[in-house]
Length: 43
Image (cartoon, rainbow, N blue to C red; front, top):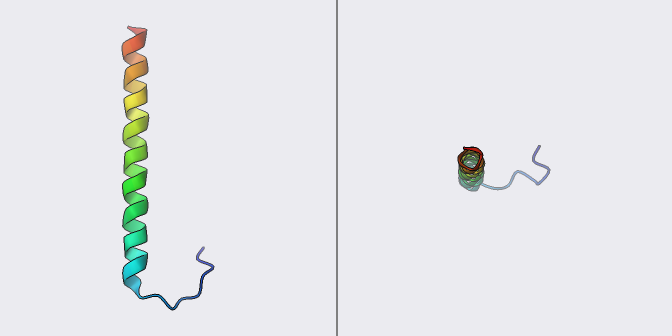
């Protein structure tokens, strides 16, 4: 999955993973918000 050479310490990798998780959570929140708005408009 990672094509770059493994010369980095584990710390930056952890930071990248954390950032990806945060982005994923934000995406889910946005999608739920959109669904909620659509439901409200339907009512």
